[in-house]
Image (cartoon, rainbow, N blue to C red):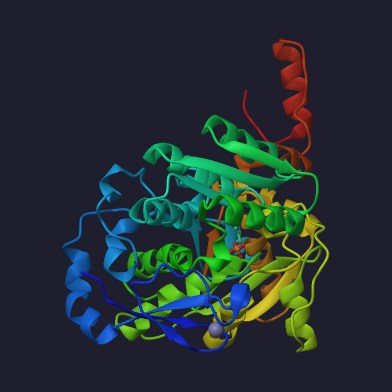
Length: 417
Ligand SMILES: *Cc1c(COP(=O)(O)O)cnc(C)c1O
Ligand SMILES: [Zn+2]
C-alpha cells in the first residue's frame, strides 16, 4: 500500500503527481529539489505502534509504508539498517553529559549510512527498467551504490574525485564498477557525472536531486526513535556535506510526529569541518549560502557547494537545532577517544558529529542534563591513511620477553608479576 500524496518543489512549492518519474521540478530545474509528501491521515490507521510490534523485518525495509519503493525485490537485497544504537559506557563521562547514544552506521553492508539511500536507488532503477546506475560521490555514496548494484545485477558507473580515500575506491573496484577518478575536486566530479548521466541515460543516484534517497536516509531517524521506544533524545548530532542526510534525519522524525508516534522532534545539530563549512558560515552570518573551500580530512563532508541546502537548513531551523564546525585536529582526537572508550572506529566525517557534540557542550549549547544521539555515519576502516594520523605507530621490538617487560614497566599500564 502506498501513502504517497504528492511531490512538492522545495523552491516554488508547486505540487506534482506521485506516479511521475520526475526527479526535480521542471519549472525550477536542478535547484528545484522535490520533497515527498504523504497522506498521514490514512497512514496513521495502518502504521501505529502495533504495526512495529508485529513487524519482524529487522532492516530498513520495516519502514516500507513510509517510503516510495515497491517491495518486489526487497527480499533479494543485502541487509541494510536496523544498525545498533549503543548507549555509551564511558565516553559520556569524558564529554560531561549524562546520556549519550551512538548509532553505528558503520555496520551496514558497504560500511556507511549511504547504504540506506543506495538501496533505494537500486530498487527505483529496477522499477523503472534501467540496467545502469551512476553517481558522483566523495566516496560512500559511490561505494554503497556499487555494492547494491552488484548484488542486484545492475551495472554501475562511478565518478570520484581523485582525493577519494583508498578504502572506498577499493570497494568500488571489488564490486566491479566502472570507476572514473576525476582529476579535480568534488564540484568538477559532480559536473562531469551530470553531463554523462544525461548523455547516456543512466539512472541518476546523485543524492540531492533524487528525492527518493532522502526517504531512504530518513530510516536512520525512524530506527533511533523506535530503538528508544519512541522517546528520542533531546538532540541528534549528524555531520553535513550536501545536506541530504540531515534532511533525511529531520524527515524521519517529522513523519513520526505527524503519525502521533513521537511527541517532539529532537533538536538537530548539523556539524561541519572548519575546512569546509558553508552551512555554518551562512548560519553565523545569517546570510545566504556561499561556495566554500574544500579543505578537510573528512572527505565525506568536504562539499563546497551543498546540493541540498533547503532541506538541510529546514532541518536545523524547524527542529530548533544549531550548526557547529570542528577542526581536523578535533576530529582526529575524537576518533581516538571513540575507539578507546567505546570500541567503535569511525571515519573522519562520522567522528566529526561527535567532535561537534564535544564542542557544543563546551560552548554551553548542549547541557549536561540533555540526552544526545550521535550518528556515526561511516566506518573508520574505509580511510586508513587519515586514521594513521590520529595515532602513534606501535612499538617495534625483538621477540624477547625481557624487552617486553622493560617496555611495559616503563609504560606503567599493565601491572602484574
Ligand atoms: C555522505 C556522508 C555524510 C553527509 O551526508 P550529506 O547528505 O552529504 O550531508 C556524512 N558522513 C558520511 C560518512 C557520509 O558518507
Ligand atoms: Zn519549483
